[in-house]
Image 1: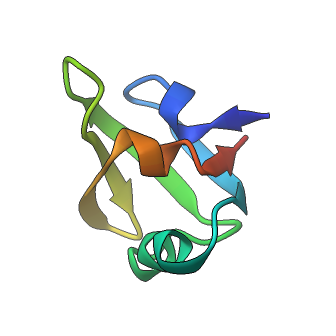
Image 2: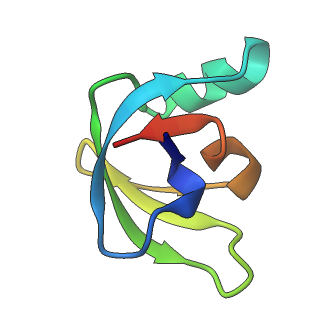
Length: 73
């Protein structure tokens, strides 16, 4: 099991599971990140925060803490 936080730049991964609950999980899902969706990791800031993603054609920034809650393959 890997989390989105561990994925290298330029990689496309598929979401297998969302961890977390309540407002945090809702915020992630509001970004369009759901089980089965593909995410392209565009850029990771030098210190790892934020992680720049492309999801469903939209460019998003995600905090490292949130990225840890997204399991991918």
